[in-house]
Image (cartoon, rainbow, N blue to C red; front, side, top):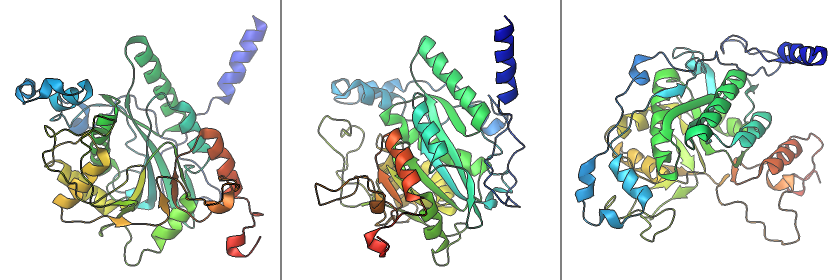
Length: 370
């Protein structure tokens, strides 16, 4: 009994208590991660309560509806639903709406509840909250709910514990699925409008990408005449001349969802960068553009509605690097030290690569230091 008591006291003393919310006006001499005040349910009326969205049963009358995969039937039943309550919120992540201009780069990372290990790796590597070259990098993970019954309650509890300790979880009360990634994006854009409307730039990406966030800050600081506040930027791996996949696979989009055979230009959803100005424009457009099961194509539709274009950036590699020599180590840090983003990595690979690309002793043939 004495041993158990001593163990409990030790755990209590070492439990991390979040410091006060972020105030970006002054940069500390060393990176100090922000810690969001715990809040299981949000208090902003505009996002807190929305009527439970009902099935649009008229979809059953669409020709060929019952021949579609169940996931697409469900998507069509609930396609009109764009408002879901937040379970875990971060109203002060950016220092409040008025202080959000102090956040230069907000890392918005899509991560379902079960991906605990990936989130922890990112917190320790490229998604560390820190100042770089005089500006702040901040982090949020975007999530819905997963599983059912006991499993769902267990995963929600895990998210709540992470939220309390790290202050970096946004969780909405909708079921995670591939077709609901678009819904997640729209809900996040609404949150940005409410809580971080003056953020300069954002990275929107998956939790299995490797992002060289220091390089991103360097690039964004060098974008001529664009501080993110009032000019358009949406850049990544540009996709042009594409259209809906009509074969029945993960990316299948039937004519019942989209009759047109073409998409507007968009950037691959593995990861892309955008200005805060563009994020706010996208949210406004999302109010008028019907949800689509392919989230990155949907962003292109919203851009097109606004009369805006995405652009290509050669440093964004959603399909990995093209390393021609078979005998080369594909995880040689010299291949990655100058890129912005590569998809995809396992957690252990992420740890190793981040450590190596930040090694001041790294020598590479490309910069003449090898």
